[in-house]
Length: 185
Image (spheres, rainbow, N blue to C red):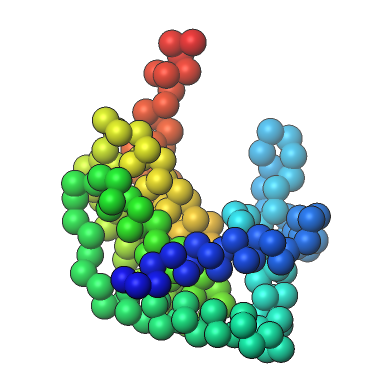
């Protein structure tokens, strides 16, 4: 794929365009963690308010609009790409990051459910893998990144069953693997 890194570049663009202060929805603070209120989803990389700013800016910035159209065409191609099958390895985990971020950004920017359904399909497939290659923890880390971003950005779209599957997979296939390492310290 010749434009494989466009979503990554677009994500960096979003980070540099966003304000220095995090923008959180003031009306929707969802939960507490360690006694502190944390914002509603999406939480990772850019907020819903920053998403709205990018959409507004794309109406007047031809470069941004062109990037979004390129992203959309890549997302459309990914909807028909074959599913990545186990076993997980570094190439596959990086491909998962690429696919999930591309489709998730497309969903957030264009509000088309086809992209969210594509992400949900990828997340379910990935969470049903027997493992994320714990012998090479970088594979686990990259796969967890992909799953966490998909979960966060599509939180309001995903079914309850899919959310539970994702949460259990992250705990079992990633977080629980690190506990013995901390206990050895």
